Image 1 (cartoon, rainbow, N blue to C red):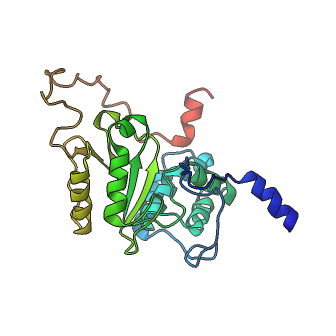
Image 2 (image 1 turned 135 degrees about the vertical axis):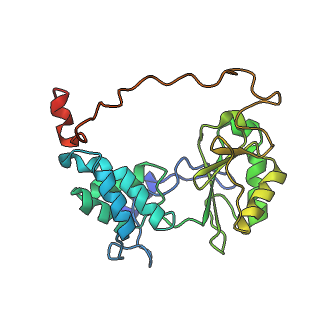
Length: 261
């Protein structure tokens, strides 16, 4: 046992006293049982979500059900309050008819899946270079001070979880956070506190026209002068033959044959 412990200690990262190490991931790659998360814990999709399950699987050939692992895991996570218990992963494995390990490796690889409980409002704070230069460290300190938590922690009331992550692709509107599914951008310490207080009241600000909300009043990525290019509107989409599927839906199982595979 002692030898095994020494071997494990050589593999785990350590930090010098007083040195803050920034984690590049959000969870361990292995499962640890907790009272509400064991293989024996019950999980099943609701009747409403089973309708979505069948719709998801209908998009893939019958012999490629495993292609639905990611959307099914996402559906399970949303049903379960924003995180995935191991029982939900087992249910997905059963539905797509693969070994559970195939599902575990997907859930542990993609950071969109939370395998431990998170708060009602899951704050992912971008700390990559553009956001860092524009003040993400100040936003992080503001959140930690206002909520009384540190990076990776959840408030005692279960409302907020804070996690610093890598680039979320909104560099033009740095600094920013992803709050559950939504982007709140161009943050300052003041607007960050206002956002947190609105969430506490159960009234997070509605998304803007383009699916994100710069908190400085601008529209999407437009600068202070507003829209200065593409003033004639978006280009016309290519014409599509509206009768291309006339006579019935395409059978996904036959797609490979049609394409000569």
